[in-house]
Structures are given as structure tokens and as C-alpha cells.
Length: 216
Image (cartoon, rainbow, N blue to C red; front, side, top):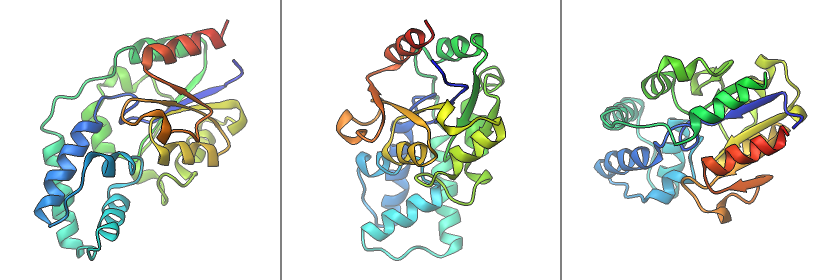
């Protein structure tokens, strides 16, 4: 494998969190008269919270709330989400250990806030990443290439020498627009939504085996 860096999305790739994000968003948005389903959330994964709310309100024909209401909405969503005990996906630690053992640089690139990264990942896991890019580090979130382009710039690695692991259409589009190879995991969405990726894998065990075969 010729990759000099492997970058990971966080939600739905490192942590099994998307069902909890969806439940929190559905509950909060319902209070503001917007009824959404899980797929509404999953298809917008990777966008910042503001982008997601703007997009959902627009799709459902609602005016975007004023800033005070928006901040209240976001605060309620974070409180609901952070009340859950969320775990790493199986094999994540083995994948990170394998990559680090091959002296390949790693990055975490998420549309979530830094507070969510700190809440979800303990220091031992976080230390496995050479760089971390959150929503606060960029002016444009996924599907724009900026998040992954920034991470690669920070690592000093050319896009064509990088691999990005994603699980959602917005993230895949961001990765491909940044010029990288992208593998997609079917953790939250089936393959038909992930067709823009270079490879689609069913689970983390399959991803580990694919990475191991690439380094042989």
C-alpha cells in the first residue's frame, strides 16, 4: 500500500454514534415543528451542525430560526447526545495500532465540534492521531474538500498518497474532492448511498483485513 497517511471520519467510523445523533436531532427538531427521520440525519452527516439545521429547515419549508433560537436548539441537541454512553466500533483500536505500526500518519477529520471529540474519545485513542480537524477549524464543512485538504496540509502529505475512511455521502464527496482515495464503511448507510467511494466494505473487520492485505 502506497498511502503515506490514512484519515478517518469520527462519527460512524471511529465511534458507533450516528444512531444517537439521529435520536437527539429528531427529538430537538420535533420541538421546533420539524419532523425528520434517521435517513435525513445520516445523509447530512459530515456537515456542521449549522449547515445541517439550515438544510433540514429549507427542505421542510421552514424559515431558519434566529440566532438565539438556533443556539438554544444546538445546546439541547448536545445535552441529549452527550447523555449517552457511546463506544468505539469493534476493531477500531486494532486498525489504529496496525497503521501506526507501519509508520503511516493518521488524522481524524470530523464535522463535529472539539467538545464532541473530547467527549467521545479518551486520550489514549486520541493520541493515535497525528492531527485532528473539527468543525471549528474550517470555514466550509463537508462536502467541501476543505476539512480533508487541511488535514493533509497539516500532515505534509499529498492527496494522491492518502486514504480516507468514511461512511457517508457528504464525507466521501469531501474526500474525493480533496483528491484522495476513499473507502466507505456500511455502518449507517447501505452501499447504494456510498457509490462515490473507491471501495465499500461492510464492517471494520473487513476494513482491517483489506488494510493488512495492502501492506503485504
